[in-house]
Amino acid sequence: DTAVSQTPKYLVTQMGNDKSIKCEQNLGHDTMYWYKQDSKKFLKIMFSYNNKELIINETVPNRFSPKSPDKAHLNLHINSLELGDSAVYFCASSQDQGVSEQFFGPGTRLTVL
Amino acid sequence: RKEVEQDPGPFNVPEGATVAFNCTYSNSASQSFFWYRQDCRKEPKLLMSVYSSGNEDGRFTAQLNRASQYISLLIRDSKLSDSATYLCVVNRGNQGGKLIFGQGTELSVKP
Image (cartoon, chains in turn blue, orange):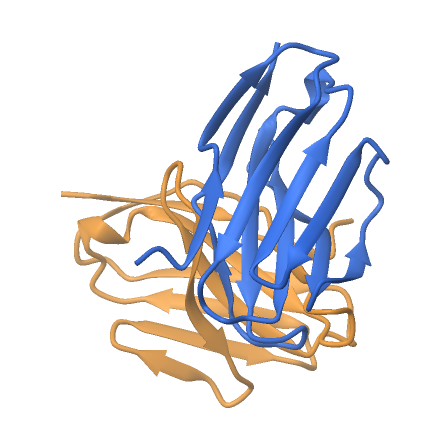
């Protein structure tokens, strides 16, 4: 059973397009996150939601819009894709928004041409 | 300066070697500390939490020095399967579970 799943695994698209990445967790966790790992392998948080409520909104372009329809799902929509958006995007979840362990999804490798 | 800094890699060691990774963090308000492991083209996975008293899990020992804001990971008797990137991670605890990652240290264990 996959605990945190993401789709798609790979995404190749042209500059200017709009795309979405979906994430689902079946762990019963309350908190979900989006992280971005750039070409230098540096992982940085983008957003977190706790029980469908936005908690963390780091300084990311407003072309990125997360959406949590329920606490098991956290999607990421990106408008007007740019070359610099190319990265691996990881979804994660944790029991709560404190210091509990975070479980990561397999990642979505986005390439913008 | 990055909030979490790690030894630059890569570390290339023979099987059976002992290897140590160091990490420093700059925010004294940090509350919890972890080592995550990331295999090539995979997601990060928790290796172990780090406590002030030090903790051990088999061949892995982690230490935290709050006064020096320093975290370490010691791997004894390295195995080929230990080859991965090791990420030092800090959680401030009061910011919604936000994890701050170091840039990672790559370990390559050779036969």
